[in-house]
Length: 241
Image (cartoon, rainbow, N blue to C red; front, side):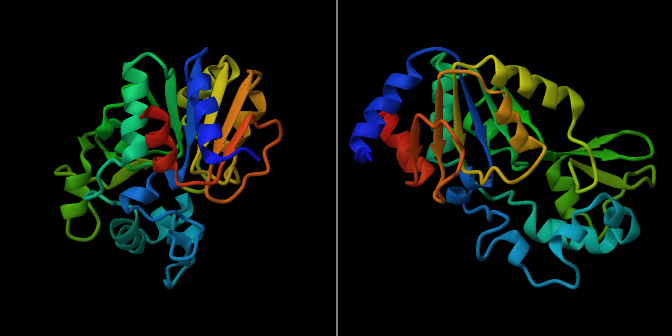
C-alpha cells in the first residue's frame, strides 16, 4: 500500500480532473463532536427504555411522542457543533469549482454552516421542522427550547423534517443524488459504513473513473482507486495544503 504522502498526491491529482461528488455519513461530523450511530459511545449504544432504532421510527413518533422528543432533543440535536476541517475543505472545493455536490446522510446542517451550497440531504435536517396541522415552519432552536412536545401556535404537532425508520427518502433529493453520482467522474466516500440503505445503494450507479474511500474502518467497496483509513479532516487538510 502506498504511504500517506503518495496517496495524498494522487488524491490531489484526482480532485483536479472531471466531475467530483462527495458522498458522506456520520463519520464526517464526529470530528465536530457529533456522535455517530454504531460505534462504541454512539447513539445506538445509549441506554434507554426502548432501543434507539425503535424510538427513531415513524410508528414510535406518533405512539409515544413525548419519549421520542426526550431522546431526540438529547441525542439528535447537536446545535453547538461547529464545522470541522472536512466540512470547510468541501466548501472550499465547491467554491473553486472542483466539487459538483455534497450528498450527505447527516441531518446536522454542518455542510451548509461551512459554506457548501449544493448539499443533498438524503435523511433531511434538524433545522427544518413542520407543523402537521397548518404547515408552518420552525427552526431547530424552537424545537430545542420547547417544553416537552413542540407544538405550533395553532395547536398542531411539530415534526422534524428528518427521515425516520419506516419512512421513504425524499424522492426529489434521492433522484438528484442518483443523477449526480451516475454522471460523476469521481465519487469520494467519506465517514460512512455504507451499511445504511437505500442511501448506500446509490454507489451501485457510479460508472466513473475514480472512487476514493475515506473511513476509519476499512470499507469493502470494490474497485476503489484510493483508500484512506486516516481521519477525514486530516486527509482533506493534507490534500488542500
